[in-house]
Amino acid sequence: MSKIFVFLSQLYKKNIMKKFYSLFFVLITVMLLKAQGNINFDDDTKWIKDPAASSLGTSYGSHGYSDTNFTATGARVIRNTTSAQDGFPGAFGTYSFRLEGTANSSLTMTVGTGGIGTFSFKVRRWDGTPATNFAVEYTADGTTWNNVITINASLTTNSDWKTVSGSIQSTNNNVSVRIKSLGTTERIMVDDFSWTLPSSDPALSVSTSNINFGEVIIPNTSSPSTVTISASNLSVAPTYTITGTDAAMFSATGTLTTSGGSLDVTFAPTSIGAKSATLTITSGSANATVALTGVGVSADNPFSLDETSPVSALVENFETGVVGSTVMPNNWKTASEGAIDKKWSIKTFNSNKYAEMTAFNGTGTYNTWLISPAINLDQINKTSVKFDWNSGYANGAELKVYVLKLNSGVMVKNLVTTINDNVNTAGYGAAYSTETLDLSAYSGVGFLAFEYVGDSAIPATTTYQLDNINITSFLGVKDVIKSKNVFLKNTIVNDALSFETKGNATVKLYNSNGQLVKSFNINPNNKTINVSSLQKGVYIVSSELNGETVSQKIVKQ
Image (tube, rainbow, N blue to C red; front, side, top):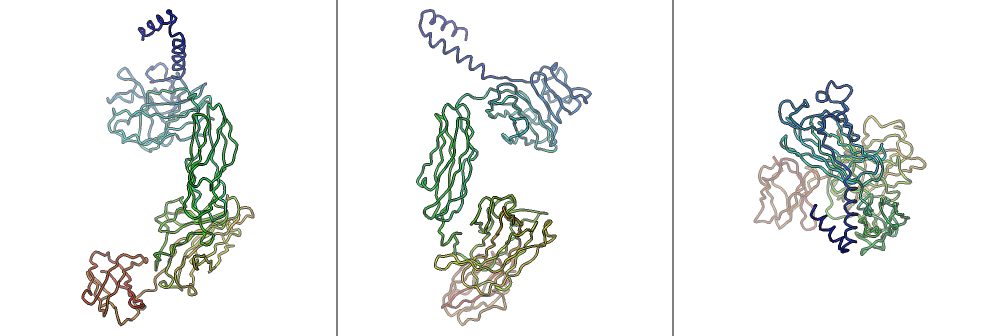
């Protein structure tokens, strides 16, 4: 480096590269300013012990280090050695913080004037304990902790140090970074902190990278979704554009400044099908994007009902659903006609999952639907369709039950019953109630649908819960349709099904949930089918020959 300075000085004296020489020193100054600090805790004279500790190394407490504002909870000072005296500081090794494996174990570093840009530190596992998970969090206002990154240390040996780094980019004074244990028994060691000042480069960030508006009925417009834009070091206010094949169906409104702002984005489809576009926010060299998606659906079939592959039975207890998700399992779907910020979702209580909807803490009127897969209404037991329901804090919201049908592509709503609980006004019912429906008036293919009707403004915000929706097939031993063409020779089956037939036929085998598990052809020369691979249980064998349906229940042993 000294030779470089001599060389540049000679050039400067010769009146050559004066401008470069000046720029070089400016660059060196900026680099020095960027390198805000580092610390490795090795000066044992700077340790501030917990007042309750008898010495630095024998008690977990609230230790500190006088070089900067370090505090630790549930931690002790430790030497970096693998000897038996690890818990006792001394002349045999350097120093680190060791976090005890409890939910309150943490190490906090507060950086003073100037804020913080990037940070890094090292971590390793403690002798005799497994790898641990921990989070790096920060606060710029002294109260709100934001999760930066959750880390699985994946440390296999005691000497295996792992470097962890992150970026905060906050210009606030007194930014605090906290390393917090997420385990209950594991212990970790942390050391070698370094940090920089925040970047002076222009930057834009958005609160979400994508917005999915779901299904919107043509020609309606969705409720707005808000995108929050954060900005730093901008010289001009950002602008925004929406591009893509379907850009005209999406719009954004709002005012942005050099500090950021927010945009309300909406979706107004003009044709049926999946639509997409990209929202781009730009200021100089800084930009951020948000992917926009939605589905336009016809007003004739606003819930995009699909009659293909109807089931002849179903049992839905929502146990395969994801708690908190509005995506329903097993081809059930949710849809909304009113406010769309709340939908039916999967909840759990006492290890039991169920579907729930409420207008409580909502934004308006709700007509929110939970809709079954397509059902062959001619193959179900129409007089014993059952479901369990419960309610909580009842105050006027209704749960309506429908059979939905498509008539030449147009959806028709057929109201079956309405539940308007006025009993559970002070809490939830102690047990579910079972409702039995009679669907004898309906035939063909249809959908069992539950509509939540509520309003957060009135209020009518009763919470309704659904579980154990049970539609059984009418196909049983007593329901065998006699036929001159096809019938089973055996209903108790081990390895083979045997038929007696006078013609060709396609035979389908359904499980007790109405799901097709096997399909095969029989004829006078092939009247035995191998079913040895089927699991034990009850199945329905069904066939159609010359317009006549033949069905019978079998038991696979």
